[in-house]
Length: 227
Image (cartoon, rainbow, N blue to C red; front, side, top):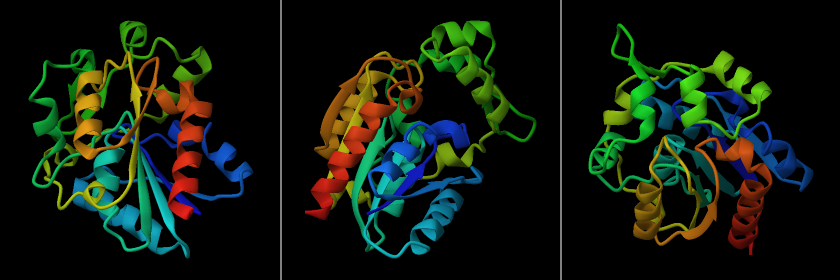
């Protein structure tokens, strides 16, 4: 099984650093995508190119904003299933912004800063870590800070096309103390998709904090779509 892993708006290569080796050890070919984060359309095109470069059936996994990307990329004919890790799963014509604006702002909004060109980036000061990423180690925090990238406004504002989750089986890992993407938003999206739901404790950094649990869900999905 070809497993394509898609990061969120932070754009950090380490998003999947603890998960990818576990999947590879189980015999899967793993591709980690680094998207430009210039627009949803650009990120979908970049991820589609990664899918096209594979040769077999594909399972997509997306973290955070990466869920919006896989929702669109999943229309590729070789994609067999979708795994969302504390991720957005927009419906047709819906943007990431439209989803979050239906709910109370998450705590992360206090730490988001607008760049001179309209881009967005979080400001991880000590208060940020205490509230948003308290369950990361000091070493993990340092890497996240060093790798943080800005994201253009269009990744949040562009609407999704026909969502692949309408036709494909989906799995959802919900972070129960997430202060970046509110848990109730995650639960509502998972229910709307009819996804198989797995709940884990902790922050939005689920792929780092609960790498074994995330890997197990991806392996379960891979086995299901291969059978």
